[in-house]
Image (tube, rainbow, N blue to C red):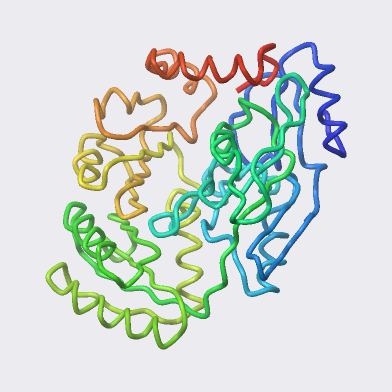
Length: 369
């Protein structure tokens, strides 16, 4: 494996490559494309942290846990709370911030604050010709070239190897509480979550587990200063009476642990079978899950994200048919990934757009993706 210790070494390695390179960060996600492994895990360290400006600049290989620790010391946080994939994928390694941005990894708080790319102020990356590209800035008011940074975020290394990211961070939260309802069916739960997210009470998470221990469980999260959280939780419970009987859980540590499990899709840890992640319009979520006929279902983002566990090799996309969203196979045997990609390749218009971008940033086709 090639492990450059600096941006210059990474650029040189890409320039000198005569075959496909398989980019990776901390090695927590898979499956990875074929090619010579090259990792950004050697590019570590916080370049700049300006708590007053809510700005963090960090090298791509820096572990997310290290960043969280530094931010906690300043009573700040990564608002998009990136998921840790190791539990659902059964992988090891260490999640890095470069991998988070490259995959646009976002957790339950996405319903209020947006995705990882929405907090990206700028970045540096090395394209497929070994050229270092800098885009964006290090302060919130500098948005020059911001669209290119957003394009690279979520590209999974197809356009370049991220070496440094500048992020907007937010103040930490003093406390949190959950509102929990039991026994709602999927459609009723989605209606309740939509109603909650439409209130002024700043719900920062909305999830539903139809197969939770003790019966179907719908949970909503509120965060902030303690008096505000207490008031908003009571007010929201009152507003949601038409949607069920809501109990307030306010043990801060228990609530935070519960939402870490939701963030990391804990119901699927240790499970078998293929795992799909489906983006969908919340109003379509329950019907989509019914068509999937999956062994296990879990809803996040108020119904905008549906996790589905199916049998090995099931072509879920064919089963779902046309819908307003997309389905991503997260966990399966490599041959299943290849077979389903062959069965349902990208639409022609998307293929053309993707090819045009890759021709621009990686004309040699060095960056396997």
